[in-house]
Image 1 (cartoon, rainbow, N blue to C red):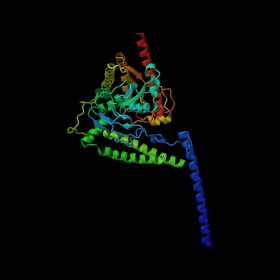
Image 2 (image 1 turned 120 degrees about the vertical axis):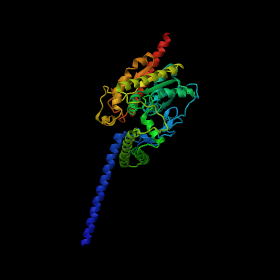
Image 3 (image 1 turned 45 degrees about the horizontal axis):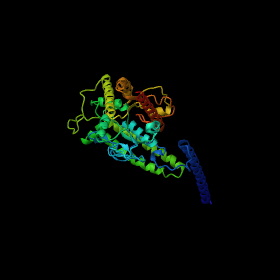
Image 4 (image 1 turned 180 degrees about the horizontal axis):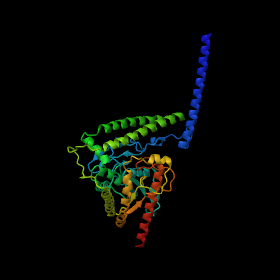
Length: 444
């Protein structure tokens, strides 16, 4: 009898536990449905099937799933990304390490093709990808009678970490290979001060490629990459594999709760990845005390230059490189537009929301002070650029009237909303400038 009572109590307890578990799962699913709707603006069960992993709701900005974190040396360009497939549909890392659907040099296959070359660092690279996908610049240019029926081809000659005079050298290199260009857009400014400042702190010539990108390559070549940097590299590689697996699982979730829990898991992996990248970046820029046996020569400075001298030199490197790009292109009547990119560390009238502040600003950032000192130094060179007939566009205020978040990290990159605003500014400004040139030519 006693055993029967115990059995009944056990069954009652199990029944209650199962009911509570069912209620828990029900409310978890219900909450996940609401969370999914708020995040994606659609219901989970009749959602559109996602083909692109970047559209799964995970912030993959800066995550190189199919690439090594370390670039490759190039004897002319300084460094490039390793050629191969990229996670963006329709793009690859082409034969010269640029994110593009095409290999270079690209020859025109139709008379009405109009080739736009984009130069600069990672912000310029992102802009080029966004333009290929959304064609905002062509929408503006087609308003000109002479370009109405053109087929626009956007080519990226930009890579994360590039800074002048790399854009100038890359332009001349590809022109020498026979690359045709009908319009050139150069988006820069941030790397020229932020990364050149790191060169200066490491006693490396300011005009040399970014020490942040070159030094780990020299360390690998000399077998002198630090233990901490190697450990961070291993963690990065392991996290990339887990992120890829998580994204694959996310594409096959049949319940909203699965989507919610997997999204949180994958986003946490992405955050860990980015933390390890920061650690790697800090470690890989530490020079070895004795590099006299290095097989790679990088022009050194005898000492760290004082800020006033260093930033003046950075600004001149930036301005003179742009002037020479214009001179080379103007010889073939190719319009050249130079855009100074916006950056959160250069203070404007824009008011940042609390959530964006957490994303966009980092007290430990090695770039903040360089931008605060460097951008005013660049502004002082505007008269020299204008004197040399450079179409210089100052984009530092383009986000001032926008209240929603536009930055995706504490460096310099923009989210989709930011890309839309920036691309429209560039397209609208170029159209206005070309219209003015057209009106002037008619008066002559």
